[in-house]
Length: 150
Image 1 (cartoon, rainbow, N blue to C red):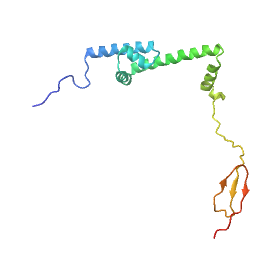
Image 2: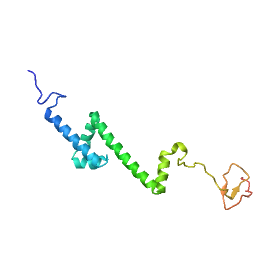
Image 3: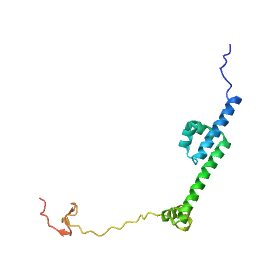
Image 4: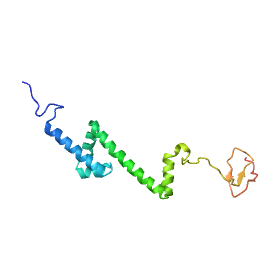
């Protein structure tokens, strides 16, 4: 006797569940537009989990492209705001722009890895026998004769 599994066969979908997915995706896209592509508040507004969003994003190429377009629109908006601030004389904004977009022209922040050490005078006890370690003292090198070891 063969045992049948309850439910739809794997991969089969009902028309109602497909319509629900389409409605859910539209809600998510609307929330993303309202929040300039920022996911957390969009998920809260649309009442969806990050897992559901990731599933839709990874499985539906059209949905993914629409989400990516919304995120690109957000970058365009922020970039336009940056240019407005630069036009109004915003020095920090100008520097930021040149560091990020003007690299090919030499506007790159570099860390100087060279190190200079100022000369420091250190006093040492220098024993006759060079096998013993020298001990640091105050400011100048002095020579002390040590008694012979017996």
